[in-house]
Amino acid sequence: MKRFLTVLVLIAVAASTLPAAAAPQMVLRLGETHVADYPTTRGDMEFSRLVEERTGGRIRIEVYHSKQLGEEKAVIEQVQFGAIDFTRVSISPLAAFAPAFDALQMPYLYRDEEHMWKVLNGPIGEEFLNSLEPANFVGLCWYDSGARNFYNSRREIKSVADLKGLKIRVQESKLMMGLVSALGAVPTPMPFGEVYSALQTGVIDGAENNWPSYFSTSHYEVAKYFTLDGHTRVPEILIASKMTMDKLSKEDQDIIRQAAKDSMPYQIKLWKEYEKVSEEKVTAAGSIITHLSPEAVSAFQKAMEPLYSELKPELREVVKKIREVQ
Ligand code: GTR
Image (cartoon, rainbow, N blue to C red; front, side, top):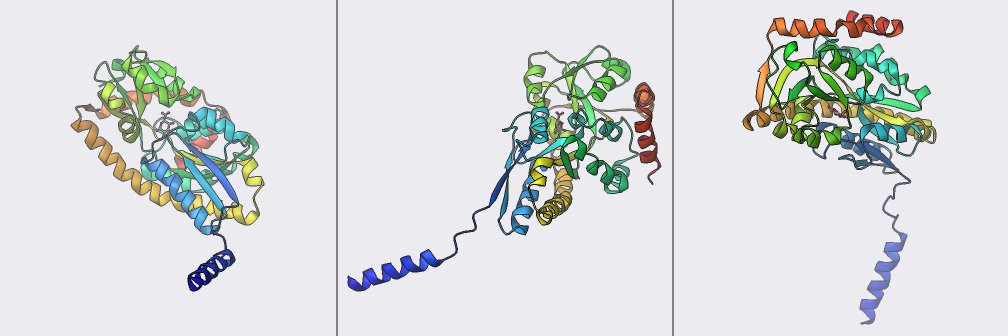
């Protein structure tokens, strides 16, 4: 018995002299609108993992997916005044806070995906990430979001004329409202989380998004006509609150910036896989997928030209530079 007690005492002493399991000194929050297995959420988680690893567990970033912290616009506002530390959002709603971002989401702006990545990974993309500081954000990195397409519950869209009069949900973005109006449809801005029931109850006829969002939100169940018009490529962005970043040492700020950049290839790889899976699933579930003829695509492009002439001169200048990127 005595021996047993001695052993117990020894164990207790040993345990008390062990270093405590590294408790994080700082726990930060990241808001994400998508569900846990969506490519952007998994990118956020990779970013968080890298930060934790590279700070030896001092900084932990908790990812709140599935809009647990709110819808995109509300989360951006909270990031702006430091109540939420990070968020991954589409640049469409961000443009309400930093209007120059509209230049990056103009319709049919990029020749293809490769062109978009050259722009985002080059000096223009870097300048845009850095341009957010006056608005109290720190731009960290870009994620993939493919191309956006129209879908609706009423009819197959084979031409611009087929969109006429349809009520189409858009993100809370002036540019997107203008885009839908230019096509003769009626834009209805609404938070992402309300779109399913609005489609189901007929408050709206359709919406527009990429394959993964059309699938992961189950919108395909209530809007089966999907037209591959590819009107925009709207990059996703990971941003930090400037107030949060200002509290960190230069070294930790650098770790965060680098971790974000290093999470990009992972997100982009998952994106490609999920795009395919989404296409297969919605097709198998009975969505009617419409491919546009080259003439119809030209007509879509022509209908949206006024959006370019309405741009402020300084943004037109950015668009010109984007187009020049080879
Ligand atoms: C998705 C994007 C979301 C959100 C959504 C929307 O493609 O990943 O962040 O902006 O579109 O349409 O609201």
